[in-house]
Image (cartoon, rainbow, N blue to C red; front, side, top):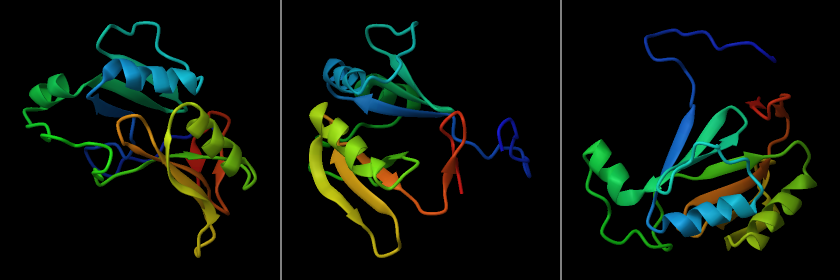
Amino acid sequence: MTGSRPSTPGPVPPRLTVVTLGARDFDALRAFYRALGWPETPNATEDWTAFQTGGTWLCLYPLDKLAAEARLAPREDAGAAVFGGFSLAVNVEAVEDVDRVWRAMVDAGARVLTEPTTRDYGVRSGYVADPEGNAWEGAYAPGSALDDRGLLAL
């Protein structure tokens, strides 16, 4: 799988390259991802940064600026208790790694949403929320594999 590219059946390539989180408290959110030890781009600025996560970049940008750029109205009070309708995941290579990754996120400042558990469908995972309430799942999916860049292959 290394080095292979997915075929493009239409005009939009089937890939996800960047996830940008609109930050209410940019400095706190940046500090959380730094505490995880994730590599931060050297060209970060005082109000934009990116962390390389395998083949996808996780970017942080102030919520008001991101909303203005996309011409969307930001939620008045998203708060940690409001589910944004998505979750982000860090998949691991072995089932025993789930608890370690989940604990490292909690130790870095994440709030516990669910303890790691083995789901009825075989996946072991646990959920945490970063300082702004974005849901992160530490997960192991039986039958999946990670390539040398950390990209998930099912």
